[in-house]
Length: 390
Image (cartoon, rainbow, N blue to C red; front, top):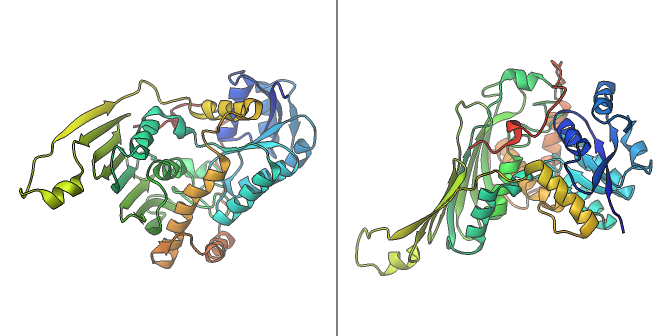
């Protein structure tokens, strides 16, 4: 039985450096840093300063077959996630991949198949699933206490970014390097939580505005309208061009409403089912007889470190995953469908035409322009940059 997990990190850029510092400082029980890999020699130099003596590679395939690691954490540009993760599974390694799973559902599907065939542990970095307020919201919805869902509205516009941010990396905000904009970079956490709490829609209509607030070739403002099997609707609004922004999730059901905002969940619970009152009441506008439950946790959960610890525990002790890698295809399905809807100016039913999406995406990637970058930050930790920021 394995007593500890030796982790190899592929990509020591912005978020990769945060993971590096977390592992090297011993914050994950049962896990050590086995090796790092990056094609940028300056990032290798940085890794060696943080973890003196660590084995370093500029080719991930060499690291995968080196025998120095048991698991790989993939933190490279989005279009490389599936390709590199599949290679890691083929080398017999466990895999934790950064979000999103990749840039297309077809790539995510190939990765999920490789993971299943490998029988290894596969997780994805949806760290906001550890946030207690979202966990509570999910419990309220799944328990049926909110009744049958009617509508959800998530306004998530506090992902503000400047032009400097977009100019800080040649891959940022390009179809070839990043594969999308706010829906693929900033919003995957929220899209994941949206479907984690409310379920998957069956139809998407979206408007994705390219370069509305910045000089970029991908969307920095998006509005998604969703329809669900039971007739419920949903709206998801995301932008990197609003300051100050908003982070508010409101869910309406037949037995009340739930609002998640400012780090707390407020559940206004009806003492009856609204549908029954609508059909049987002799009043035109009866009073809203309800109780209010307020859930306000002190912290925001274990975040990235919690997902890594859970990944380690799943390998060592078969602990259930908080964020199974195969579930990454769900939020990616929503964002892919949103792009396809915007590109074709039509409603898109799920599952959508993956071949059509891939063709239209390839057209944009072929016409994409690589930028000159100002350079990336040399060190990051798990700071406010990745918090929920209500």
